[in-house]
Length: 276
Image 1: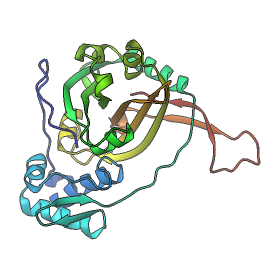
Image 2 (image 1 turned 30 degrees about the horizontal axis):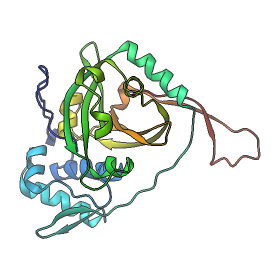
Image 3 (image 1 turned 120 degrees about the vertical axis):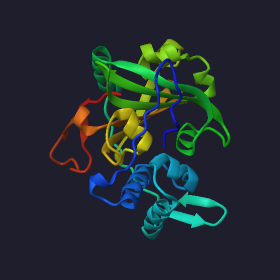
Image 4 (image 1 turned 90 degrees about the vertical axis):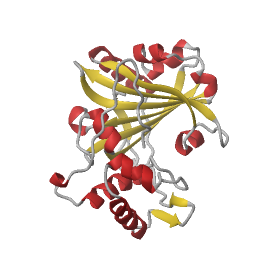
């Protein structure tokens, strides 16, 4: 889950909570959001979910509601609860891989960068969460830079960007740098241009903090895109999560096979209109 955004240059945190008006019981709404976070990989296998007290604060519901939500997740085999130790994720999902030119991606990002602005909501040194830490091949306990940004057009939120950088990379950045530049531009400016980017696309549901930041209802579907960037030496220099309400952005990927004998399960994307 996103950490609570701090007040940054006049940006004030906004919260949104589950509501009975959505038609589903509160515990079903809570379990749906947490389930989505687990399946999308935001909560990785072996990681611990926030405690009951934190979850009641995040969702604005009672402890019994949280307990019923956790029981549902446990019965589905997604989590394991142990007295005195917390709630651990035990679900392990699959990721499918394909490839496309990095130049296509950079071109599409440049186009969106001209049409909108990025606002930095938080900029802080943190202990790396499990997923970005392992993706960047960092040791246990490693610290780095976390930056939460929001892309906006005419003052309205489009999507959220959550960046993690190793300490050696993050030390070269300032909040102003990451408001003026895309991730690729920022890396290039410090002499660490991206040579290869791995993109993982999935879906998730808006938790209370994300809902407030994106001006959507709790439990709203979001497109989740995780990007892992490597420099020319094969070193991981950035880990980025983009969370997009589907009605605000569409992705177009055109696939074609080189010949009729090609396995239909393995297609080469020719173009991809994607931006973060």
